[in-house]
Length: 97
Image 1 (cartoon, rainbow, N blue to C red):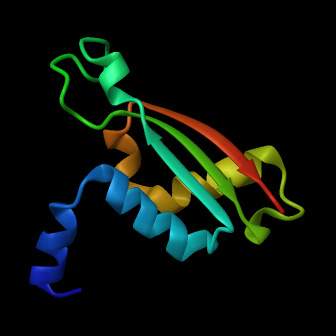
Image 2: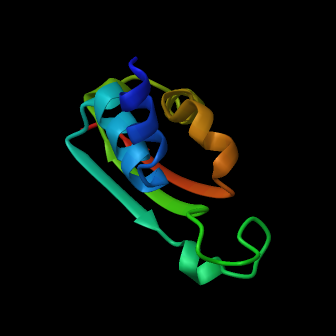
């Protein structure tokens, strides 16, 4: 990956980075990312507010067919990779079509 591309990606919002990675990993039929961080401003993980820290995520993808709930969660965490430590709370609703 070129330095310019890496810098551009580093400046994208966490929501946008999540969307990009999840589309690439799962080719979802449905993808909904809700940033609920504003509701948690001042709480642990977002003490000053203004950060992307709390998300609700819904994915419907054929990639989840035949996978257990735990396997689906692990796959999402693997796809998000180095974003996971930046996320304080992640609610997952994962389904196969």
